[in-house]
Length: 552
Image 1 (cartoon, rainbow, N blue to C red):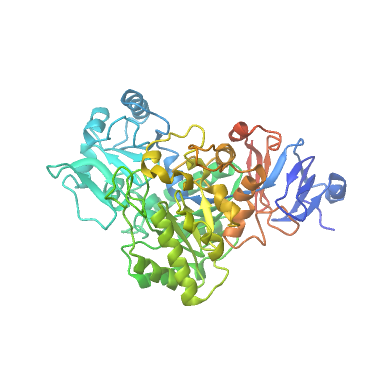
Image 2: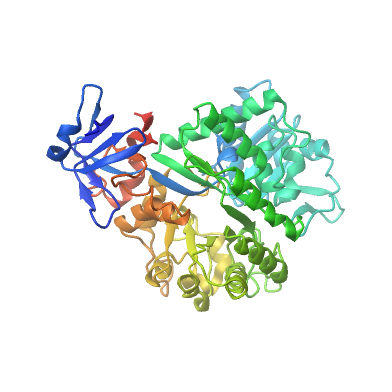
């Protein structure tokens, strides 16, 4: 009989295993769960070396699987000025001044998390100049699809009079052809990101899909690995043991492999190949090379990431009809239907999974059409292609996810009906289509697989904040059906569904004998907690691969 290295006892274990949904204790040996059962059943597995964790009748769940993050960028932003929830010129200027006072030697000032409507008027370089007139000042929107820059930053980046950019990207110019300061989508804001201490390397996996050029120096690689470790530590403090990254390049894979080789990778990471609309279609086959080189339980690549559209806030989400307040504007598709279908067909033929960012109902339709075309071309298989976000969906497309085997990868914290979320500008962009916006339960009722995540750093990484959002959302119109989730569906969305989404439900996402030892011991009985108090829950202990990665 194998003795346990870690024995979790006196617990309320929610296993996410339908065959045995509850237990009192878990035994871990090495990196595997060796027994799940009652305290009495597992008592004999205790040895002299066994570490016993008394859960104090609090909840124990599988390690949280964060299904949609930008790990490198989020990690770097932990050191930047966060303006989430800060509104009004005076409040923002005060926060900027205080932050700058603590960093007097910074040559570039970077803030993030600001809302489009934070100032009550359009954000311009002139407004930012009033806050920081003497050095480059760059402010990122919470959605990471828009940035604003002051005059010094625009001049240093050489974009005061704009620049030719790929479709869907824009340096907004005034009537005189001078930059207003608003930079829409990655190709527009990359030049100012290059001014930052990291040179924007943390966002290359999203902005270009390429590795740094010229290659990062040894010192830069060490700095970037330190950011990855910082981000993973933050994730572990929130009970997260696995993350699906939503941007990728060879550089990120190389850095994470180095950490793994050093024994310093403390979470399971999946990195995709990101196919940009600037790439030749045939280049999608590069994803198969990534998959061949990176296959393991701690680090792997099995997926192609594509952006089909932008976001509602900037009118770049692709719509089936014009926006209510801009009837002639149907958004900004990043791929033609023909090109998207061909990329999907090639990737699917290689048996790669595809995850597509699609926010508008037109973007969702185009994505589903592409996935359906791949089935016609290559035959039906268990592909588990994904759609990320689905903030709007046409009623005719709602049943298609289940019919096509497509997974809905959703971020509850973004829901317009979540208490505390500002209704505008989303209500104005959605209009009378609101009953089919953020349709979490509507999709679940069709039998579609629903997985939850945060989209960090677009939103806070805290999964318990996401859980509370999922459980407390309220209808915002008379015709809006309820979309709030049950506790068990919510927990499933952050654990077992995430494992299913990456074809690893045979080894994680569930507390089950023989499965990988990824566990979160919470500080509360989550079943007894009020729905509006879920966000306050924290892990007492996080275990990944049989190792304690966080302890309160």
